[in-house]
Image (cartoon, rainbow, N blue to C red; front, side, top):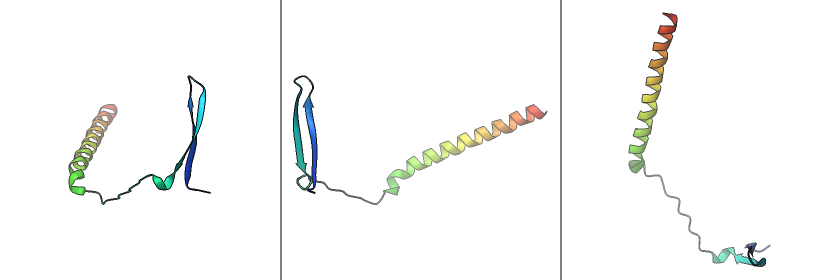
Length: 72
């Protein structure tokens, strides 16, 4: 089996179909996996982490207050 991508392209208006075959080796592909840049992503992490912790703290305190009112 050759390394080819094959498919059919059809024109809806004319109802004309063509078969297309592309050799995978002819497609330039470059995959570059670099290490994550922690210095650039640190502010986003700090913002999201502090937001989640703040929401948890507010929810926890609201739950404690509601519990005190319920039992009070």
